[in-house]
Image (cartoon, rainbow, N blue to C red; front, side):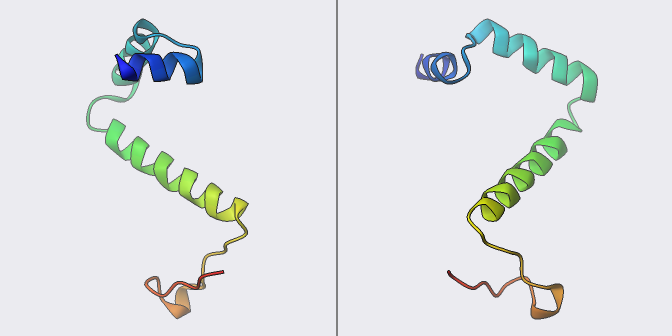
Length: 70
């Protein structure tokens, strides 16, 4: 109940519309490809947020594990 209320309030869609969208995605991409797509989408959103906040990725030479706080 909370999920459908949240989705309707944020996106203006009900549960039926979300189910139809999920089925179309499943038919277009298949069950094995959807997790890869969501992973890529998550990375894109994270990079967007980091860029919006003025954070830049460190060069590959300095390593991926070290991060600076602004």
